[in-house]
Image (tube, rainbow, N blue to C red; front, side):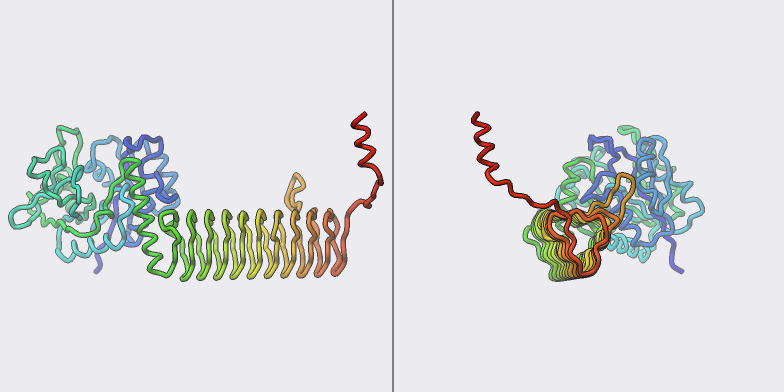
Length: 462
């Protein structure tokens, strides 16, 4: 029978070194709070329970931020250290039997694969308590792993308590533990550290070993996975590492980058093979990019679907929109929520589209606003066209049917329909439905007043 798994995320610290009113674990990497990366890694393990330990100062913010996640919360009423924080989760873990994975909420780069490997090794070795260690290039600030002459783990020595000899040890504690639930009561045996006035979770290894519990310290993994974030500088470093990891992932899947150091790709984004990304491209949220696309500089795409063979030109913004195959967008275009651009359509420079469908092969190439509209196949929309969708109280829709031609500088006052194959003359204001095949013109009669310019100049001289 497979052993059950619960996870405890330690997130009670306010993170004073961040010098921010925002709780530390809610600071973002590529737009996503760091604790969400930890929760995503845990979700891949399919645990029965996930408990987030919060403090008095950050409880409200964390409960609001994680309210939609399938997690429980435990309150650490006083900041008395990491062992005390884990003990605070006892009620939330009540009745649970199995393995309990403990991880810090400020380690966003750890992967599901590493955690799964750790759990497998712990269970195969039949340990009551295990932790992950790694060899640090610079061990300063980490707890050192102390072993006997045979390599058996004896304990963890925090830097402030370590001797000069112990400080030279480069194998350090990752802060990721795995307890058999029957071992958790030993937390009460940890003594208060006199220097800090806290109960160190790192002391559990020595306590458990001294009581005959079989303990494992498994040294593996990439050092960068276990980076804990305590300062803004460390946050920036983690963000760079995350971006580099993401770029490597997509390079292996036939995505090209003109400048890999200036592209930001959120973890939920999907990109098709053969797509090329230029500098300063931001792909955010739940976005899918098809294969063979070209995305030029300074483009931001959020929560959108982009089909195959799409070209998005410079300085365009796409938000909660859907772009079908072979469409061309931009430059300087804006697609707002609810927009659907069909196959082979073209949305050009300084065109804004909102809550509208633009049909297959349709074109709006210049300086237009299309809001709350249904635009049919092969419609041509001239420069300066506006769908006047708001009457000051509510929005109305404009319908432009297949093959219609809308001349430049036209205002379509909704609700209004331009039927199949109709033409609207440039400079018109359309307030009534235009029949199929008709020409609609709404202009004042043009007059030429001969000699007017000369008379005006004489008047100015006088």
